[in-house]
Image 1 (cartoon, one colour):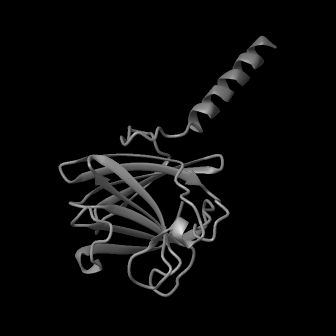
Image 2 (cartoon, rainbow, N blue to C red; image 1 turned 120 degrees about the horizontal axis):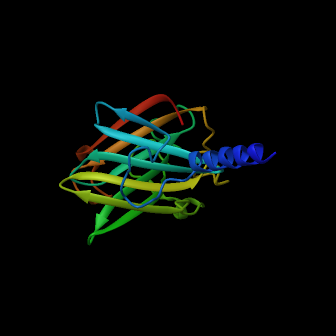
Length: 185
């Protein structure tokens, strides 16, 4: 009996270790995230782990300005309907925006201006020498029309972007954007 109990406790500890949430501190430790995807054209790597009802995300990439990620549940008219997350530094501090794309082109609006709320639970970043490491978390299902519901294994369209300036209102002609179809967390 004692051996079975010790074995069970060991298996439970292993399970808890595997399901441990990444630390949202702006640094990515080896093995911290369950999965990753490197987008070759942009040089941006997306990391993620799903723990319970929460997804932990991270981006690493080079940019002189802001960096961002967006999600579309299905192909629409350009970016219309995209759930977007944009990160920039202001006065040495991270500004993390949860945004929604109301029109097919142009700048997105913050969720709170479109009937939602900021769904970012935690965020942190390091930005050194033009290199970003940004981490954040949110619920898989926020219940908001401004957020895409994330279901593990369900295909989405992933949007990646960055800018030459830290200004989130930077003219679109000076930003770079990429679409990745059939992406799944």
